[in-house]
Image (tube, rainbow, N blue to C red; front, side):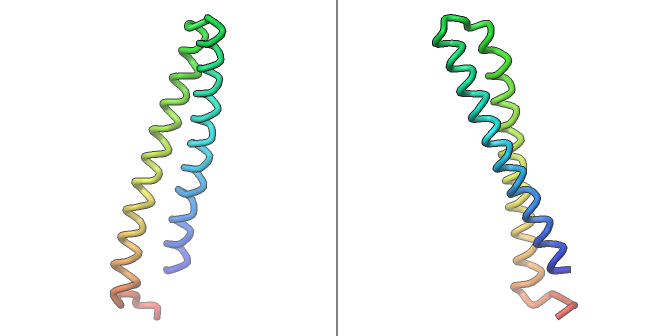
Length: 82
């Protein structure tokens, strides 16, 4: 059970990192479009940047909840598999 919970924590960490990286790349692209005087072309990468930032935050929240569950189960001696 402990290994399963650790796996559940690793997935959101990797996903949050990937989404934050994508958010930064899209934000950079939007800034380049804006600087080039093409605000219309900046709208889509700006939108995608926001979506990936939101997804990253959601994954971080899920990770926090899983960490709390892990602490409750294993650090308080509730692990029946020990």
